[in-house]
Amino acid sequence: MSVSEAEAPGAPAVMSRQQVLQAMSGLMMGIFVAILASTVVANALPRIVSELGGSQASYTWVVTTELLAMTATVPLWGKLSDLYNKKLLIQLSLGLFVVGSLVAGFAPNIELLIASRVAQGIGGGGLTALAQVIMAAIVSPRQLGKFSGIFGAVFAVGTVAGPLIGGVLVDTSWLGWRWCFFLGVPFAIAAILLLQRTLKLPTIRRDAKVDYLGAFLIMLGVSTLLVWSSLAGAEFAWGSWQTAVLVPAGVVVLALAVFVETKVPEPIIPLKLFRNRTVTLTTVASFLVGVAMFGGTVFLSQYFQLSLGKSPTVAGLMSLPMIFGLLVSSTVSGQLISRTGRWKGHLLLGSVLMAAGLGLLGLIDAHTSIVVLSLFMLVLGVGVGMLMQNLVLVTQNDVPAHDLGAATSTLSFFRSLGGSIGVSALGAVLANRVAALISQGLGPMAGAGGEGGKVPNLADLPAPIANVIREAYGTATSDLFLISAPIALLVVVAVAFLKHLPLKTQSGLERMAAEESA
Image (cartoon, rainbow, N blue to C red):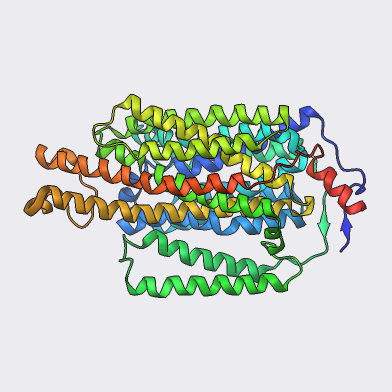
Protein backbone atom coordinates (compact mmCIF):
# COMPACT_ATOMS: atom_id res chain seq x y z
CA MET A 1 0.00 0.00 0.00
CA SER A 2 1.61 3.24 -1.07
CA VAL A 3 1.14 6.74 0.23
CA SER A 4 1.38 9.98 -1.71
CA GLU A 5 1.47 13.20 0.28
CA ALA A 6 1.84 16.87 -0.32
CA GLU A 7 4.66 16.73 2.16
CA ALA A 8 7.08 14.03 3.13
CA PRO A 9 5.67 11.41 5.49
CA GLY A 10 8.37 12.09 7.97
CA ALA A 11 7.53 15.79 8.14
CA PRO A 12 3.85 16.27 8.69
CA ALA A 13 2.40 19.76 8.42
CA VAL A 14 2.83 21.51 11.74
CA MET A 15 0.14 24.03 12.58
CA SER A 16 0.84 26.92 14.92
CA ARG A 17 -1.28 27.38 18.04
CA GLN A 18 -3.09 30.27 16.34
CA GLN A 19 -3.84 28.13 13.27
CA VAL A 20 -5.10 25.30 15.48
CA LEU A 21 -7.43 27.69 17.31
CA GLN A 22 -8.69 29.17 14.03
CA ALA A 23 -9.26 25.72 12.53
CA MET A 24 -11.06 24.63 15.70
CA SER A 25 -13.31 27.68 15.33
CA GLY A 26 -14.31 26.47 11.87
CA LEU A 27 -14.93 22.93 13.15
CA MET A 28 -16.99 24.14 16.10
CA MET A 29 -19.01 26.40 13.83
CA GLY A 30 -19.75 23.46 11.53
CA ILE A 31 -20.81 21.24 14.45
CA PHE A 32 -23.01 23.99 15.86
CA VAL A 33 -24.73 24.32 12.48
CA ALA A 34 -25.37 20.55 12.28
CA ILE A 35 -26.83 20.41 15.80
CA LEU A 36 -28.90 23.54 15.17
CA ALA A 37 -30.38 21.97 12.02
CA SER A 38 -31.47 18.92 14.00
CA THR A 39 -33.05 20.85 16.87
CA VAL A 40 -34.33 24.12 15.37
CA VAL A 41 -37.34 22.47 13.74
CA ALA A 42 -38.58 20.86 16.97
CA ASN A 43 -41.03 23.64 17.87
CA ALA A 44 -41.62 24.63 14.23
CA LEU A 45 -42.69 21.27 12.81
CA PRO A 46 -46.43 21.55 13.54
CA ARG A 47 -46.58 24.85 11.61
CA ILE A 48 -44.35 23.56 8.79
CA VAL A 49 -46.34 20.37 8.20
CA SER A 50 -49.63 22.25 8.42
CA GLU A 51 -48.65 24.96 5.90
CA LEU A 52 -47.29 22.41 3.42
CA GLY A 53 -50.40 20.25 3.72
CA GLY A 54 -48.61 17.26 5.23
CA SER A 55 -50.07 14.40 7.26
CA GLN A 56 -49.06 12.94 10.63
CA ALA A 57 -46.95 10.42 8.69
CA SER A 58 -45.20 13.34 6.95
CA TYR A 59 -44.47 14.85 10.37
CA THR A 60 -42.69 11.63 11.36
CA TRP A 61 -40.72 11.40 8.12
CA VAL A 62 -39.42 14.99 8.29
CA VAL A 63 -37.63 13.97 11.50
CA THR A 64 -36.83 10.35 10.61
CA THR A 65 -35.23 10.94 7.19
CA GLU A 66 -32.53 13.22 8.57
CA LEU A 67 -31.83 10.81 11.44
CA LEU A 68 -31.63 7.86 9.04
CA ALA A 69 -29.30 9.62 6.61
CA MET A 70 -27.03 10.90 9.37
CA THR A 71 -26.75 7.63 11.31
CA ALA A 72 -26.34 5.38 8.27
CA THR A 73 -23.61 7.47 6.57
CA VAL A 74 -21.37 8.17 9.58
CA PRO A 75 -19.27 4.96 9.11
CA LEU A 76 -18.68 5.75 5.42
CA TRP A 77 -17.53 9.31 6.17
CA GLY A 78 -15.19 7.99 8.84
CA LYS A 79 -13.62 5.45 6.51
CA LEU A 80 -13.24 8.00 3.69
CA SER A 81 -11.36 10.24 6.13
CA ASP A 82 -8.78 7.45 6.61
CA LEU A 83 -8.25 7.22 2.84
CA TYR A 84 -8.67 10.73 1.43
CA ASN A 85 -8.24 14.43 2.22
CA LYS A 86 -10.07 15.21 5.47
CA LYS A 87 -10.26 18.93 4.75
CA LEU A 88 -11.97 18.41 1.39
CA LEU A 89 -14.38 15.88 2.90
CA ILE A 90 -15.56 18.17 5.71
CA GLN A 91 -15.99 21.03 3.24
CA LEU A 92 -18.03 18.68 1.06
CA SER A 93 -20.23 17.71 4.02
CA LEU A 94 -20.78 21.39 4.83
CA GLY A 95 -21.64 22.01 1.16
CA LEU A 96 -24.22 19.21 1.24
CA PHE A 97 -25.70 20.75 4.34
CA VAL A 98 -25.98 24.16 2.61
CA VAL A 99 -27.71 22.64 -0.43
CA GLY A 100 -30.13 20.66 1.76
CA SER A 101 -30.91 23.74 3.86
CA LEU A 102 -31.62 25.96 0.83
CA VAL A 103 -33.86 23.33 -0.78
CA ALA A 104 -35.71 22.88 2.54
CA GLY A 105 -36.16 26.63 2.97
CA PHE A 106 -37.66 27.04 -0.51
CA ALA A 107 -39.59 23.72 -0.51
CA PRO A 108 -43.09 24.23 -2.02
CA ASN A 109 -44.39 20.86 -0.76
CA ILE A 110 -43.80 18.30 1.95
CA GLU A 111 -42.22 15.73 -0.43
CA LEU A 112 -39.38 18.06 -1.44
CA LEU A 113 -38.87 19.05 2.20
CA ILE A 114 -38.44 15.40 3.18
CA ALA A 115 -35.97 14.87 0.30
CA SER A 116 -33.97 17.93 1.41
CA ARG A 117 -33.69 16.49 4.91
CA VAL A 118 -31.81 13.51 3.42
CA ALA A 119 -29.12 15.90 2.08
CA GLN A 120 -28.99 17.66 5.45
CA GLY A 121 -28.64 14.32 7.22
CA ILE A 122 -25.80 13.12 4.96
CA GLY A 123 -23.98 16.43 5.52
CA GLY A 124 -24.64 16.19 9.26
CA GLY A 125 -23.24 12.65 9.30
CA GLY A 126 -20.04 13.94 7.71
CA LEU A 127 -19.72 16.77 10.21
CA THR A 128 -20.37 14.45 13.16
CA ALA A 129 -17.64 12.03 12.09
CA LEU A 130 -15.07 14.34 10.51
CA ALA A 131 -14.92 17.15 13.08
CA GLN A 132 -13.69 14.75 15.76
CA VAL A 133 -11.32 12.98 13.35
CA ILE A 134 -9.72 16.28 12.29
CA MET A 135 -9.42 17.39 15.92
CA ALA A 136 -7.49 14.19 16.63
CA ALA A 137 -5.31 14.75 13.55
CA ILE A 138 -4.09 18.23 14.52
CA VAL A 139 -4.02 17.94 18.34
CA SER A 140 -2.43 15.28 20.56
CA PRO A 141 -4.69 13.21 22.87
CA ARG A 142 -3.03 14.90 25.86
CA GLN A 143 -4.20 18.31 24.60
CA LEU A 144 -7.42 17.07 23.02
CA GLY A 145 -9.29 16.93 26.33
CA LYS A 146 -9.73 20.69 26.53
CA PHE A 147 -11.04 20.86 22.95
CA SER A 148 -13.33 17.88 23.54
CA GLY A 149 -14.76 19.81 26.48
CA ILE A 150 -15.44 22.81 24.26
CA PHE A 151 -16.97 20.44 21.68
CA GLY A 152 -19.35 19.18 24.38
CA ALA A 153 -20.20 22.76 25.34
CA VAL A 154 -21.01 23.64 21.71
CA PHE A 155 -23.20 20.53 21.56
CA ALA A 156 -25.04 21.66 24.69
CA VAL A 157 -25.58 25.23 23.49
CA GLY A 158 -26.82 24.07 20.08
CA THR A 159 -29.19 21.59 21.69
CA VAL A 160 -30.90 24.15 23.90
CA ALA A 161 -30.70 27.09 21.49
CA GLY A 162 -32.26 25.25 18.53
CA PRO A 163 -35.82 24.80 19.82
CA LEU A 164 -35.88 28.31 21.31
CA ILE A 165 -34.67 29.93 18.07
CA GLY A 166 -37.13 27.82 16.07
CA GLY A 167 -40.03 28.97 18.25
CA VAL A 168 -39.05 32.63 17.88
CA LEU A 169 -38.69 32.37 14.10
CA VAL A 170 -42.09 30.70 13.69
CA ASP A 171 -43.81 33.30 15.89
CA THR A 172 -42.17 36.25 14.06
CA SER A 173 -44.50 37.09 11.17
CA TRP A 174 -41.90 38.73 8.94
CA LEU A 175 -39.55 35.73 9.21
CA GLY A 176 -41.52 32.47 9.46
CA TRP A 177 -40.55 28.79 9.55
CA ARG A 178 -38.46 28.88 6.35
CA TRP A 179 -35.77 30.79 8.25
CA CYS A 180 -35.32 27.72 10.46
CA PHE A 181 -33.48 26.28 7.43
CA PHE A 182 -31.93 29.49 6.07
CA LEU A 183 -30.43 30.38 9.46
CA GLY A 184 -27.58 27.85 9.30
CA VAL A 185 -26.52 28.63 5.71
CA PRO A 186 -24.27 31.68 6.39
CA PHE A 187 -22.63 29.87 9.34
CA ALA A 188 -21.91 26.82 7.15
CA ILE A 189 -20.44 28.96 4.36
CA ALA A 190 -18.33 30.86 6.90
CA ALA A 191 -17.08 27.51 8.28
CA ILE A 192 -16.09 26.36 4.77
CA LEU A 193 -14.11 29.57 4.15
CA LEU A 194 -12.50 29.54 7.60
CA LEU A 195 -11.38 25.93 7.21
CA GLN A 196 -10.02 26.66 3.73
CA ARG A 197 -7.84 29.43 5.13
CA THR A 198 -6.70 27.88 8.40
CA LEU A 199 -6.75 24.07 8.21
CA LYS A 200 -3.35 22.78 7.05
CA LEU A 201 -3.48 19.05 6.40
CA PRO A 202 -1.25 17.01 4.07
CA THR A 203 -3.09 15.17 1.32
CA ILE A 204 -2.85 11.51 2.25
CA ARG A 205 -4.10 9.06 -0.35
CA ARG A 206 -3.77 5.34 0.25
CA ASP A 207 -4.03 3.11 -2.80
CA ALA A 208 -7.12 1.27 -1.66
CA LYS A 209 -10.64 0.88 -2.98
CA VAL A 210 -13.51 1.99 -0.80
CA ASP A 211 -15.78 -0.91 0.07
CA TYR A 212 -18.91 0.64 -1.43
CA LEU A 213 -20.79 -2.67 -1.35
CA GLY A 214 -20.17 -3.00 2.38
CA ALA A 215 -21.13 0.65 2.88
CA PHE A 216 -24.37 0.14 0.93
CA LEU A 217 -25.28 -2.99 2.90
CA ILE A 218 -24.54 -1.29 6.25
CA MET A 219 -26.66 1.73 5.31
CA LEU A 220 -29.49 -0.45 3.96
CA GLY A 221 -29.54 -2.76 7.00
CA VAL A 222 -29.36 0.06 9.54
CA SER A 223 -31.96 2.12 7.67
CA THR A 224 -34.34 -0.85 7.56
CA LEU A 225 -34.10 -1.37 11.32
CA LEU A 226 -34.35 2.37 12.04
CA VAL A 227 -37.44 2.70 9.85
CA TRP A 228 -38.99 -0.18 11.78
CA SER A 229 -38.05 1.17 15.21
CA SER A 230 -39.22 4.70 14.30
CA LEU A 231 -42.62 3.67 12.93
CA ALA A 232 -43.49 0.61 15.05
CA GLY A 233 -46.06 1.43 17.68
CA ALA A 234 -47.15 4.56 15.78
CA GLU A 235 -47.77 3.72 12.12
CA PHE A 236 -48.20 -0.01 12.71
CA ALA A 237 -48.29 -2.41 15.66
CA TRP A 238 -45.10 -3.94 17.09
CA GLY A 239 -46.50 -7.41 16.36
CA SER A 240 -47.64 -6.62 12.80
CA TRP A 241 -46.60 -8.13 9.46
CA GLN A 242 -44.44 -5.05 8.85
CA THR A 243 -42.35 -6.02 11.87
CA ALA A 244 -42.16 -9.62 10.64
CA VAL A 245 -40.74 -8.35 7.32
CA LEU A 246 -38.54 -5.42 8.32
CA VAL A 247 -36.67 -6.91 11.30
CA PRO A 248 -35.51 -10.17 9.63
CA ALA A 249 -34.69 -8.24 6.44
CA GLY A 250 -32.53 -5.75 8.37
CA VAL A 251 -30.74 -8.50 10.29
CA VAL A 252 -30.04 -10.52 7.11
CA VAL A 253 -28.67 -7.46 5.27
CA LEU A 254 -26.40 -6.58 8.21
CA ALA A 255 -25.18 -10.21 8.36
CA LEU A 256 -24.30 -9.91 4.65
CA ALA A 257 -22.50 -6.65 5.42
CA VAL A 258 -20.39 -8.34 8.10
CA PHE A 259 -19.54 -11.14 5.64
CA VAL A 260 -18.47 -8.62 2.99
CA GLU A 261 -16.46 -6.62 5.56
CA THR A 262 -14.41 -9.74 6.43
CA LYS A 263 -13.43 -10.27 2.77
CA VAL A 264 -12.24 -6.80 1.68
CA PRO A 265 -8.85 -5.19 2.41
CA GLU A 266 -10.35 -1.83 3.49
CA PRO A 267 -13.64 -2.48 5.32
CA ILE A 268 -15.89 0.44 6.27
CA ILE A 269 -15.93 -0.72 9.91
CA PRO A 270 -12.72 -2.75 10.36
CA LEU A 271 -13.73 -5.71 12.52
CA LYS A 272 -10.13 -5.97 13.74
CA LEU A 273 -10.81 -2.80 15.75
CA PHE A 274 -12.94 -4.84 18.14
CA ARG A 275 -9.93 -6.97 19.07
CA ASN A 276 -8.86 -3.85 20.97
CA ARG A 277 -10.47 -3.96 24.42
CA THR A 278 -10.70 -0.17 24.63
CA VAL A 279 -12.60 0.09 21.34
CA THR A 280 -14.99 -2.71 22.27
CA LEU A 281 -15.78 -1.31 25.72
CA THR A 282 -16.16 2.32 24.58
CA THR A 283 -18.40 1.21 21.70
CA VAL A 284 -20.64 -0.73 24.09
CA ALA A 285 -20.67 2.23 26.49
CA SER A 286 -21.52 4.69 23.68
CA PHE A 287 -24.41 2.50 22.50
CA LEU A 288 -25.78 2.21 26.04
CA VAL A 289 -25.38 5.98 26.60
CA GLY A 290 -27.48 6.50 23.47
CA VAL A 291 -30.20 4.13 24.66
CA ALA A 292 -30.36 5.38 28.25
CA MET A 293 -29.69 9.10 27.95
CA PHE A 294 -31.31 10.03 24.62
CA GLY A 295 -34.11 7.51 25.06
CA GLY A 296 -35.07 8.94 28.43
CA THR A 297 -34.49 12.67 28.09
CA VAL A 298 -36.20 13.16 24.72
CA PHE A 299 -39.58 12.84 26.45
CA LEU A 300 -38.83 15.43 29.14
CA SER A 301 -40.31 18.29 27.09
CA GLN A 302 -43.57 16.36 26.76
CA TYR A 303 -43.56 15.78 30.53
CA PHE A 304 -43.04 19.50 31.19
CA GLN A 305 -46.02 20.42 29.02
CA LEU A 306 -48.50 17.59 29.60
CA SER A 307 -47.78 16.74 33.23
CA LEU A 308 -46.58 20.04 34.69
CA GLY A 309 -48.75 22.19 32.40
CA LYS A 310 -45.95 24.45 31.12
CA SER A 311 -45.96 26.32 27.77
CA PRO A 312 -43.61 25.18 24.96
CA THR A 313 -41.27 28.13 25.56
CA VAL A 314 -41.10 27.50 29.32
CA ALA A 315 -40.61 23.78 28.62
CA GLY A 316 -37.58 24.66 26.51
CA LEU A 317 -36.14 26.82 29.28
CA MET A 318 -36.69 24.11 31.89
CA SER A 319 -34.03 21.93 30.27
CA LEU A 320 -31.36 24.58 31.01
CA PRO A 321 -30.09 22.96 34.26
CA MET A 322 -29.21 19.75 32.39
CA ILE A 323 -27.57 21.69 29.56
CA PHE A 324 -25.70 23.91 32.04
CA GLY A 325 -24.41 20.85 33.89
CA LEU A 326 -23.26 19.27 30.63
CA LEU A 327 -21.57 22.49 29.46
CA VAL A 328 -19.65 23.11 32.69
CA SER A 329 -18.62 19.52 33.39
CA SER A 330 -17.46 18.80 29.83
CA THR A 331 -15.34 21.96 29.80
CA VAL A 332 -13.87 21.52 33.28
CA SER A 333 -13.19 17.78 32.96
CA GLY A 334 -11.56 18.36 29.56
CA GLN A 335 -9.21 20.97 31.02
CA LEU A 336 -8.34 18.71 33.97
CA ILE A 337 -7.65 15.72 31.71
CA SER A 338 -5.31 17.80 29.54
CA ARG A 339 -3.54 19.16 32.63
CA THR A 340 -3.09 15.86 34.48
CA GLY A 341 -3.21 13.26 31.70
CA ARG A 342 -5.52 11.11 33.83
CA TRP A 343 -8.94 10.30 32.42
CA LYS A 344 -10.40 7.15 33.96
CA GLY A 345 -11.64 8.82 37.16
CA HIS A 346 -13.58 11.36 35.10
CA LEU A 347 -15.26 8.65 33.04
CA LEU A 348 -16.12 6.56 36.10
CA LEU A 349 -17.57 9.52 38.00
CA GLY A 350 -19.45 10.67 34.90
CA SER A 351 -21.02 7.24 34.32
CA VAL A 352 -22.02 6.96 38.01
CA LEU A 353 -23.57 10.45 37.97
CA MET A 354 -25.43 9.70 34.73
CA ALA A 355 -26.94 6.55 36.25
CA ALA A 356 -27.73 8.45 39.47
CA GLY A 357 -29.38 11.29 37.54
CA LEU A 358 -31.57 8.88 35.58
CA GLY A 359 -32.45 7.03 38.79
CA LEU A 360 -33.40 10.30 40.54
CA LEU A 361 -35.59 11.28 37.58
CA GLY A 362 -37.36 7.97 38.14
CA LEU A 363 -38.81 9.58 41.29
CA ILE A 364 -40.67 12.40 39.50
CA ASP A 365 -44.43 12.72 39.15
CA ALA A 366 -47.01 15.38 38.25
CA HIS A 367 -46.30 17.25 41.51
CA THR A 368 -42.47 17.38 41.48
CA SER A 369 -41.22 20.88 42.25
CA ILE A 370 -39.15 22.78 39.69
CA VAL A 371 -36.23 23.05 42.15
CA VAL A 372 -36.04 19.30 42.77
CA LEU A 373 -36.48 18.53 39.07
CA SER A 374 -33.72 21.01 38.16
CA LEU A 375 -31.37 19.39 40.67
CA PHE A 376 -32.01 15.92 39.23
CA MET A 377 -31.39 17.20 35.67
CA LEU A 378 -28.21 18.97 36.79
CA VAL A 379 -26.81 15.70 38.15
CA LEU A 380 -27.62 13.97 34.84
CA GLY A 381 -26.08 16.78 32.78
CA VAL A 382 -22.84 16.79 34.81
CA GLY A 383 -22.50 13.03 34.35
CA VAL A 384 -23.11 13.08 30.61
CA GLY A 385 -20.69 15.99 30.17
CA MET A 386 -17.88 14.10 31.89
CA LEU A 387 -18.56 10.91 29.97
CA MET A 388 -19.75 11.30 26.39
CA GLN A 389 -16.93 13.14 24.60
CA ASN A 390 -14.21 11.59 26.72
CA LEU A 391 -15.19 8.12 25.47
CA VAL A 392 -14.12 9.32 22.01
CA LEU A 393 -10.86 10.72 23.38
CA VAL A 394 -9.98 7.41 25.05
CA THR A 395 -10.65 5.48 21.84
CA GLN A 396 -8.60 7.84 19.67
CA ASN A 397 -5.71 7.50 22.11
CA ASP A 398 -5.58 3.70 21.76
CA VAL A 399 -5.92 3.04 18.00
CA PRO A 400 -3.36 3.35 15.18
CA ALA A 401 -3.44 6.75 13.47
CA HIS A 402 -4.54 5.22 10.17
CA ASP A 403 -7.69 3.88 11.88
CA LEU A 404 -8.63 7.14 13.63
CA GLY A 405 -11.48 7.90 11.23
CA ALA A 406 -13.03 4.43 11.34
CA ALA A 407 -12.75 4.17 15.14
CA THR A 408 -14.20 7.65 15.78
CA SER A 409 -17.10 7.18 13.38
CA THR A 410 -17.83 3.73 14.85
CA LEU A 411 -18.41 5.29 18.27
CA SER A 412 -20.60 8.06 16.82
CA PHE A 413 -22.53 5.50 14.78
CA PHE A 414 -23.31 3.22 17.72
CA ARG A 415 -24.24 6.17 19.95
CA SER A 416 -26.73 7.44 17.33
CA LEU A 417 -28.02 3.91 16.77
CA GLY A 418 -28.54 3.44 20.51
CA GLY A 419 -30.35 6.77 20.71
CA SER A 420 -32.67 5.86 17.85
CA ILE A 421 -33.50 2.47 19.36
CA GLY A 422 -33.94 3.99 22.82
CA VAL A 423 -36.30 6.72 21.63
CA SER A 424 -38.50 4.32 19.66
CA ALA A 425 -38.58 1.56 22.29
CA LEU A 426 -39.14 3.85 25.27
CA GLY A 427 -41.65 5.87 23.23
CA ALA A 428 -43.70 2.70 22.80
CA VAL A 429 -43.43 1.99 26.54
CA LEU A 430 -44.58 5.54 27.31
CA ALA A 431 -47.57 5.34 24.95
CA ASN A 432 -48.74 1.99 26.35
CA ARG A 433 -48.22 3.05 29.97
CA VAL A 434 -50.08 6.35 29.48
CA ALA A 435 -53.00 4.58 27.78
CA ALA A 436 -53.22 2.04 30.62
CA LEU A 437 -53.06 4.68 33.35
CA ILE A 438 -55.69 6.89 31.67
CA SER A 439 -57.96 3.90 31.18
CA GLN A 440 -57.47 2.96 34.82
CA GLY A 441 -58.07 6.51 36.06
CA LEU A 442 -61.11 7.34 33.94
CA GLY A 443 -62.75 3.92 33.63
CA PRO A 444 -65.77 4.14 31.29
CA MET A 445 -64.86 7.79 30.50
CA ALA A 446 -61.42 6.84 29.09
CA GLY A 447 -62.47 7.79 25.57
CA ALA A 448 -62.86 11.40 26.67
CA GLY A 449 -59.14 11.67 27.31
CA GLY A 450 -58.25 11.46 23.64
CA GLU A 451 -58.53 8.82 21.00
CA GLY A 452 -56.35 7.02 18.52
CA GLY A 453 -53.28 7.52 20.66
CA LYS A 454 -53.22 11.25 19.87
CA VAL A 455 -51.54 13.65 22.28
CA PRO A 456 -54.38 15.43 24.10
CA ASN A 457 -54.89 19.18 24.32
CA LEU A 458 -55.46 19.59 28.06
CA ALA A 459 -56.94 23.07 27.64
CA ASP A 460 -59.92 21.56 25.83
CA LEU A 461 -60.68 18.96 28.51
CA PRO A 462 -62.66 19.18 31.77
CA ALA A 463 -60.45 19.64 34.84
CA PRO A 464 -61.01 16.14 36.33
CA ILE A 465 -60.05 14.45 33.05
CA ALA A 466 -57.05 16.78 32.52
CA ASN A 467 -55.79 15.94 36.03
CA VAL A 468 -55.94 12.20 35.33
CA ILE A 469 -53.94 12.72 32.12
CA ARG A 470 -51.36 14.87 33.92
CA GLU A 471 -50.92 12.18 36.56
CA ALA A 472 -50.62 9.50 33.84
CA TYR A 473 -47.86 11.35 31.98
CA GLY A 474 -46.02 12.06 35.23
CA THR A 475 -46.05 8.41 36.31
CA ALA A 476 -45.28 7.05 32.83
CA THR A 477 -42.32 9.41 32.33
CA SER A 478 -40.80 8.41 35.68
CA ASP A 479 -41.15 4.76 34.59
CA LEU A 480 -39.00 5.51 31.52
CA PHE A 481 -36.18 6.73 33.73
CA LEU A 482 -36.51 3.70 35.99
CA ILE A 483 -35.92 1.59 32.86
CA SER A 484 -33.02 3.80 31.69
CA ALA A 485 -31.14 3.79 35.03
CA PRO A 486 -30.20 0.05 35.01
CA ILE A 487 -29.04 0.42 31.40
CA ALA A 488 -26.82 3.30 32.53
CA LEU A 489 -25.37 1.08 35.29
CA LEU A 490 -24.04 -1.19 32.51
CA VAL A 491 -22.09 1.86 31.25
CA VAL A 492 -20.43 2.04 34.69
CA VAL A 493 -19.39 -1.62 34.32
CA ALA A 494 -17.99 -1.06 30.80
CA VAL A 495 -15.99 2.00 31.93
CA ALA A 496 -14.67 0.18 35.00
CA PHE A 497 -13.06 -2.47 32.77
CA LEU A 498 -11.24 0.13 30.62
CA LYS A 499 -7.49 -0.02 31.07
CA HIS A 500 -5.97 3.34 31.95
CA LEU A 501 -3.38 4.19 29.29
CA PRO A 502 -1.28 7.38 29.33
CA LEU A 503 -2.48 9.98 26.80
CA LYS A 504 -0.18 10.28 23.80
CA THR A 505 1.61 13.58 23.23
CA GLN A 506 1.77 13.33 19.41
CA SER A 507 -0.99 14.54 17.10
CA GLY A 508 -2.68 12.16 14.69
CA LEU A 509 -0.60 13.50 11.79
CA GLU A 510 2.65 12.97 13.70
CA ARG A 511 1.60 9.44 14.68
CA MET A 512 0.66 8.73 11.05
CA ALA A 513 4.09 9.85 9.87
CA ALA A 514 5.78 7.64 12.47
CA GLU A 515 3.65 4.63 11.47
CA GLU A 516 4.39 5.13 7.77
CA SER A 517 8.14 5.53 8.30
CA ALA A 518 8.15 2.39 10.44
